[in-house]
Amino acid sequence: MLRSSVALVSALVLLAGLVACGARGGDIAGSPGEVVSVTPVLGTTTEQTAAYLNQWAIQTPVRNGIDAYRVVYRTSAPDGADTTASGLVVLPRTEGRKLPVVSYAHGTIVRKDEAPSADAETDRARTALFAAAGYAAVAPDYLGLGEGPGPHPYAHAPTEASASVDLLRAARAVAEREGRELDDTLLVTGFSQGGQAAMALAERVAAAPSLGYTLAGVAGVSGPYAIREVQTPAALDGRVTPRAAVLYIAYWLTAMNRIYHLYDEPGEAFQQPYAQHVEELFDGRHDVLSVSTGLPATPGELLTPRFQALALDPTGAALRAMTDSDRACDWTPRAPVRLYVSSADRAVPSANAEQCLAALGGDRASVVDLGPVDHSATVRLAMPQILAWFGELAPAV
Image (cartoon, rainbow, N blue to C red; front, side, top):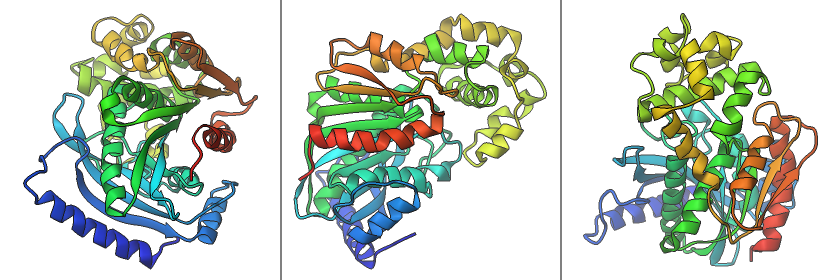
């Protein structure tokens, strides 16, 4: 990894400033977005930034160097209790003091250290892509990933939104202590799980002008926007590749059970022998291979008959769990929204975007078909297009 001694020195100064600020009587302990710690993770010149992005197969014009920080900040747990989360903040090395902001939301990961602020270079590079064009870029790890305590509430749109909003608050403090200022212009994007998170953040920002941001554009890539109407049925009927469907279902059920209490014992939802260890597979320490090998090949082998039926016709707590996260598209955007999809996606069917488009009010949203490519290819194809589009909507100075 390319690092800069300049970034290290500036981050140490920044951290000292944060500690001093935290000692002032005017600060409110536990307030959302309050910075807990800042750690430098990357600092590169313009040439080094170009080489870094090229290393991760990201081809884009690079205008400037970047400085990236892991930021731990205060936010809310699903039950509203105070907690902390981490995220990535990347500032461009430009002369301009005031910076428009891009928020990038990452896709499904199962291990804590795969988060953007940790060692996940792919998502870190996707975030750096926007900073290399002159934007301030942020990437939330979400709850329970990166440096966040506890397990991750997978695909829970309400906390994806709150963790993202609070990172934007924290990023303002980080930027200020670097002698920069975040503009109120906000561009939002995300891939896969992050597509859902991006829409949830956009809805929250649009509904709360007091946050101090104005949406300029939203770009979701292959997001599961319709868990009840599209993603769950597709996971059970074969439209989603069975192995991927098993991972998504097990991850979501174990996560939602902690919030909505879907079952008393894992054996109510999962067949044996998987019920014995399914929850520990998602403890944030197992990688995708370990999780996949610990689960069966098909959803029919994973779920009990009762929970197969409940997935297709949810009631009670299961219905609440789906509905709470499916509301991310229930708003009327004033800014343009683009939903990027592939008709050949076997992980997140493009019908999710069609459902989201139908739910969004107004005429500012559209679906962009990237062609018959697989799920992972959609983000590679979409990111350069999104950067160019964001440049038209809100150019970086």
